[in-house]
Amino acid sequence: MSRYHLSPRICIIYFSLSGQSRGLINLLASGIRLQGVEVVIEQIRTPERIGFPFNSVFHTLKMMLTTFFRKRIPILELSSRCYESYDLFILAGPTWSYNPSGPVLSLLDGHGEKLFAGKQVVPLISCRGYYRMHERLLTRQLQKCGAQVGESIIFSHPVSEPWSTIGVFLKSAGYQPERISFLTKHYQHFGHTVEQLYQVRSCGQMLAENLLDQKLAYDGDEVLLAQ
View 1 (cartoon, rainbow, N blue to C red):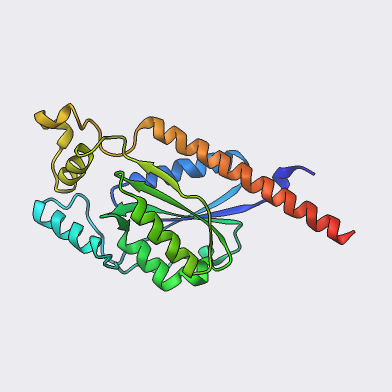
View 2 (view 1 turned 45 degrees about the vertical axis):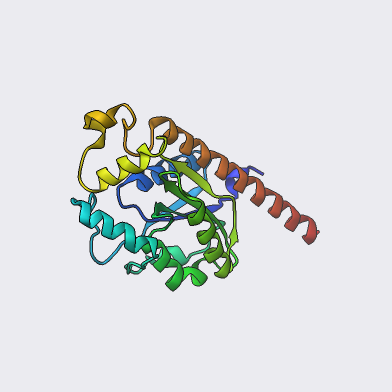
């Protein structure tokens, strides 16, 4: 029996503000599809658009403060396809002030148990570098929903500190830090590199291969039990 006839399915649910997480998700999905695995992608959307950049230092500081205290941001209803049967969920999004984003927290509060109870869930985090609190909280929240949480996939911006924090802050406030003379040497690029984008596609291929192996083994056991 060909492993590609087993037809496992993956659902990726994600939130993206600046577009960094969206780019990772699209390439992750392309890697998964290369292995013949079906992927459904659902973007978490908010009733009111959250603009990026925030276009002022004041608004950037305000956003950092509210997200540090894990302020929830209301989200629109998910499509019905999110509640179909899947072999694996991937919950993805950026780190906001050490935490999951407000829309992701709202998703877990309102829909987490219905979506993820008894399901395999892999977190994917796009971050500046400080992701550990985000990862711990997300894992804990998913476990409260009854999910079986897998090893997180982490992609951090490849700029050393404190330059990464300074650069992201200025970018969020509407500046172009990569063009500021005293920063150019230390901060040359916002977000993920081309190399990381290639890595995330390979990561998608490996996820799909592991899922195919699991499903093949499970179906093999089912055949043996039926004999």
